Amino acid sequence: MKKSASPAPLAAAAKPRGRPRSFDRELALERAMDVFWSKGFEAASLSDLTEAMGINPPSLYAAFGDKEGLFIEAVQRYHANAQQNCPYGDLPTAREAVENLLTFAATLFTDPGHPRGCLAVRLSRPTAGALKIVRLPFPRPVIMNAERLPASYANFYIANGVVIVPTFNDRNDRVALNALAELMPDRHVVGIHAVDLVWGFGTLHCLTQQQPAPR
Image (cartoon, rainbow, N blue to C red; front, side, top):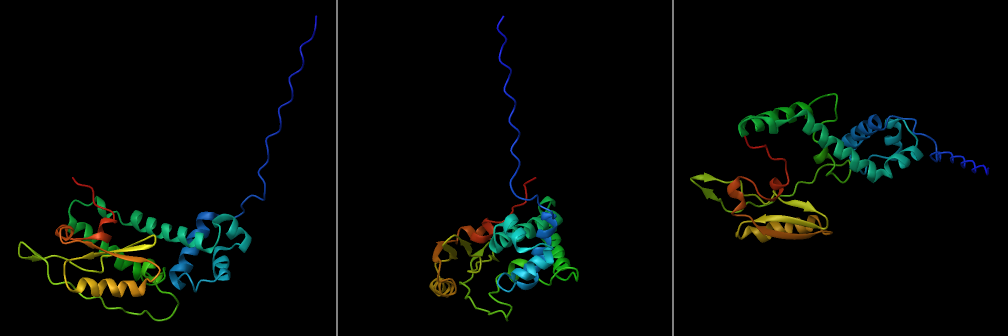
């Protein structure tokens, strides 16, 4: 009787290439977030980041791609922490939600255990120098049921290659659009008629934010 052929031996599983990661990625990200928070993006050097994270440059590049990739993840972590630590959307009324949010922000921004101020505002500074204040005009008052609505050109939203700005059929619309175009010459500034939107007590930027769930 002819013997059957023996089964071929199984190939050994391929081993992952490269050395295994030898640091806590989440802890390193938290430390990088604090560096960006205190110094801003441009002023935070690679040596500042790697020293705070306790890693070397090759490990940073392997885990996060580059400084910009690390920065993006740090900002995402900052917003995730804020949303987790301040669940204002779970409160039953808008008044309680706003009160809780403002109290949380005041406590966080003055906590000596963190850099002062808001990370998002801090990162808007191009360098470690003084802030440059640019004035935007107001449109004429928009009134509904004897109450003035928050019509403001500052409620703009920055997207990829574009800035969309609320407009109110007012002579200051063009003044505000020109001012923002000068500040962001690499983006196309577009006005969006927002008189109807502002009846909801917010316009373009507000539409991108978290909304409390209805009860």
